[in-house]
Image 1 (cartoon, rainbow, N blue to C red):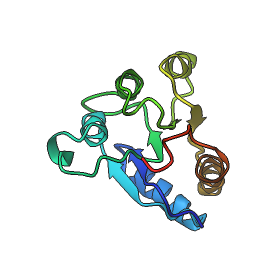
Image 2: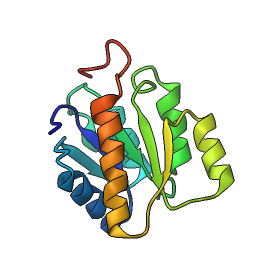
Image 3: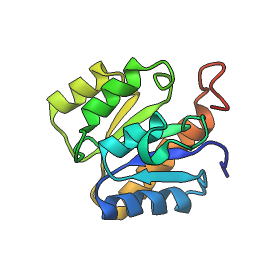
Length: 149
């Protein structure tokens, strides 16, 4: 059971967000999950602005990012994450329905760590979330000095 470090879930679709949170829970990945519904709020959270100005200075252990977001799209969020020394080392997994080659290429050019197309059926989605969680929260060794951020 993994408990340390929160997961930032950036997803505008309530059903997909609830499915992701349920899948993580079913796999005993009980890290706190912060769910934001658009790219603008994701940036506010990451840079402690607006609604999230008073939050602690730590960064999430993992960001699960949809690409097709209102206000600020996922690629712009990726660009801002990569441009700032406070966030550039936070692992980002794009979790999207887009299978477009240009979205995948642009995501990798902007520094995404992994690009996953959301499985359609629930059991495949749960398995994908298990693999994501096991790798990024248990197996992956974060860069030195970022473990507690």
